Image (cartoon, rainbow, N blue to C red):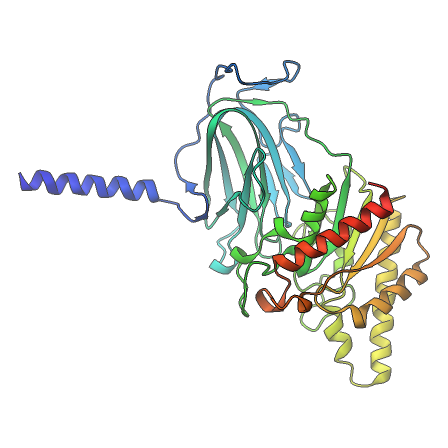
Length: 392
């Protein structure tokens, strides 16, 4: 009889390992089961789906009728590349399960693992499950029987990693997705806007500590009932920084993603463009060897910023531009230079806003970056300013 018990224990151990395989999450799991593509599930009495909307058992993740996307991304025939912070999409379905298949461009080290947040229905962004994507796999979302909206977002920034969603499957059926906000805000920035270390501490960077859905940018857009397009990469400057100068924030305006050099053709024109750059220029300016060198560096910053304003105004005719500063204490150096750049650019509808500084809160995230606390305060200030300017 003993061998029977040993066999049973071995079988149970294997089953347990299979159930746990792929788990690496914060409130969720990366499942490794085969995607379920269901036949049409019967609608219950409690389901209120507009009968005029189209439904379909199988869809492509690139199907614009059923999939609504957020932000700039590479759209290929076999999937959507989620790269920049808070890029993503939404789908609507009737059923109890949604599976998302994904692949990575390459194998990333632990501190660069891409993270995805999945929001179900009216779930708050902070309470939503988030998933590490260390290798190609499947994210499985289970919920009660009913009519659901699921929103999928890249939680971490594009410079560190990117992930392609190749499929979306349900055990029920998909419903035409007409989700759309007339308001669109595009944000250009550096690590602050990308959410660098806003849930971390110390001097080490990990994408698990980068929550793109609790940045000042994403939070303010949500408060304003606007969609956010976040175009940001850590370490980047308006003109020059002390560590890398190949790609600058103004360069990102005309390209689809951080890693894709193909020209960006906007599908929509944002009503508001927010620029939050200069924190990485400040150390470079402060390292000037003499007064003449400092003046030259300041002049280069002003010229680069002014040209950026002109380029935005040309690309997005009629948009309102809001220049922000100070979340890492750079305002004392950078603010007067931005003021000069605004004057020099002579572009209409340009405003300047000083945001709360992380150094006033007594709490800092990874590498001295703003935590969620500062981001939330800045979101309130930004929301109020945009409402004042736009009448929203």
